[in-house]
Amino acid sequence: MQVEEDATWRMYLGLSREMFTALERGLGADAGVSVADLELLEPLLAAGRPGLRAKDLAAAAEWQDSRVSHQLRRMETRGLVTRSRDRQDGRGTVVCLTDAGEVAARAAQQTRRVLVRELLLSPLDEAQVASLVEVSGLVRARIAASGQAR
Image (tube, rainbow, N blue to C red):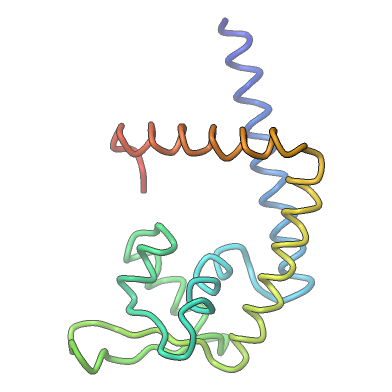
């Protein structure tokens, strides 16, 4: 059993590392952004011009507030996002895509879709994709229940 568990772990670790590396390379080449950038760009793109409160962005990305803050600082320096005080609640910050950020977000989202389809989904049949979604949900629920998430 332990040998099987170890083999399963190595396979999962290799898969996650190789997928992340492929995404990093593709996103960098096509859109000039990182996977971390994309995790914040996609919810901002979905939110449209009003942007999102930083707290809501953190929830959408499933990140801690401090990690979002550090990443936004890097993205702001590169001209992808702006941050401003929330007019309705002066304690909050609203994050918006710049025009350059919107272009980068759209390019990155398209690259992500192509790579996920090509590398992750195309080797699987419909039932395997459904199983992947189901298994991922079960594992994420177990991690959340254990208190180890985020």
